[in-house]
Image 1: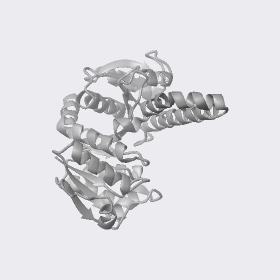
Image 2: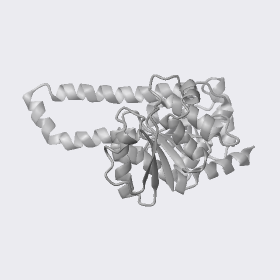
Image 3: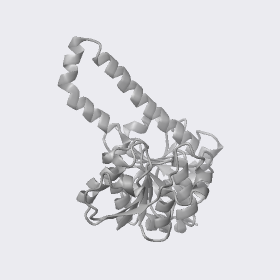
Image 4: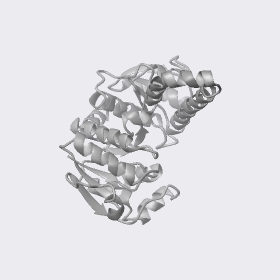
Length: 328
């Protein structure tokens, strides 16, 4: 297996990206890695090139670049070259912590869509109180969606939850404003009917307040709603930790108490960090494309690599293709 990695994408590139790959080499000796980026910069952090190939390029897609224009014009950008490695069969999957929109464009225009999937979906796995986590899609690949797209998202999420996350007969929920069957707008009402007909374990509508309680293993929605929900969850978690930190640092007594429970607080923070589950998969493409968080450190990169590895080994793309073909 070979994975292509955009070494120049993300807030801490190339250092944390390269260090993550080096750690992954030790964990996954059956994987060959292709690092794409400035070779001189990459080699600052590489002492042993065993299992690592470097493709040099000086060009990078910046966070401020217009995604589609950047992918079309910056032909030698690290992200574009990475995607080309997958397209040409020299890599089985790819990972980038760079510009999200550009990665979606590169995935769509270079790697290509699965036949029968109208639009790819961006899908992270988010934490839940019980530790199981849930697959959430779409969180921003497509602001607008049709009911047929939500059905496709549900199928892809279900296959991923079963094949990669090891969940037997994963529960699929439709994000809505109420749990009753007739709730929602025209999109969710139509999607509800299609999801009932899909080859999945559809449990009906679910509400946003129940997401972190583990109400479903897969939750589907349109990209606009999904992104709002995702940012709300992130913002709430950050806000609570900020308020908690302020209170715990407010007096000598609370500071002493904090010192005692520091390991538990760190563990709680890790439980709420969805990068522990890997990156956000771009589901619906001909090969696994993983978007790591922009602030990814070496550990997050290892988790994204594990996610890509599991998708390749469990033939997730092949299974999605077969399931989608079965409902056409």
